[in-house]
Amino acid sequence: MRHLSPQPLSVPVSAGGRQLLDLVFKSDGISQAALTRRLGLAQPTVARLLQGFVANGLIRLDARRVDRPGHPSVIARIVPDFAASLGAAILGDAVSLILIDCAGNVVGSRRRAVSEPTRAAVVATLLSFRDELIEEAGIDSARIIGLGVGISAFFTGEAGQMVGPPSLDDWTGTEPTDLLEDALGLPVTVENDGAAGATGESLFGIGRTVRDFAYLHLTNGFGGGIISDGRLFRGARGNAGEFGGVWTIGHMGYPNLNRLRTLVDEAGAAFGSVEEMLAAIDATTSGVEAWLEEAAPAFSALIAMLGYVIDPTAVVIGGRLPPAIADLLVARIAVPRAPNRHDIAPPPPQVVRSELTGDAVALGAAVMPIQRAFLA
Image (tube, rainbow, N blue to C red; front, side, top):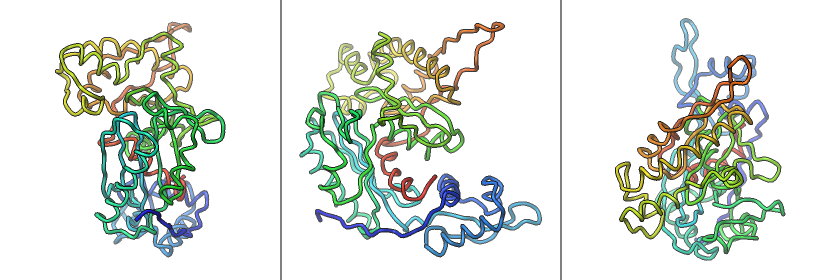
């Protein structure tokens, strides 16, 4: 199997319908009564929207239950088999692919360390992964509505061209969307890896309860994404959330995972890549403490700036950093404030570790085609 031909899923989705589907997607089943209350729409309008999606096969209504005394209500859920989507992460030392169903459940995944992630090597890996996942899941390939991609690169502002780190030099100056659409035969949506991770966090992590947050993405490099009112804020050219640049121009150091690898190696280890290191280290590994000492001030300063500039409810420490080490970093962050009015400063954002497990970039990328087709 080399080229897919997805069939267009003709489901008319109004603005109100997208808001409804967004709530249903983010919940593990939600009652019609709760939808009516949270959407602020009239009950007949919500009922009409639901029935339209039921008729199209996108939503199912489960048996009635008592939502409140005297108010029985059906439970709405996304039909998982209605469609499926693929999500790829193209990093400086690894490539991964996730297949999810329409309800956001992970159907299958693949990941491989890639020492030289050239375009040819990545395309060959993704094609192999795609065919394996489709065969393993036994799904109709025509139900796959698209491929989302998170890549460690920023947009140049010239069409869809991107610039990556040295390990992704073969991608610099290219338009990944066109290349991958031609190779995989699917509609493709491309974002920076930090933006993809932020998207995943917005739909599967803290975004289920918090609508405004900044996502800090730790990988070989450093970046992130901004979620505003539940949606990814891309900026004029798609580069909103390139927080590593703030560290660079502010001379704050650059405590990313490449720096962690350097300190761990200097303490006696010898890892060939960040991917190899992450599979072996924990909070007690020599070199981790030194990295935390370097990282805490840089993160604290960046988070203070984000608090003043975009005023998020929370700042999420995400990416590939092992959870136990992320918890230690969160505990050390002290956000500086400037109480210049009556000795009072604006409240700082809450700093938390990502609530996602697994491959945040690939998961966020996988949900992008579904979000584009159906969600608010």
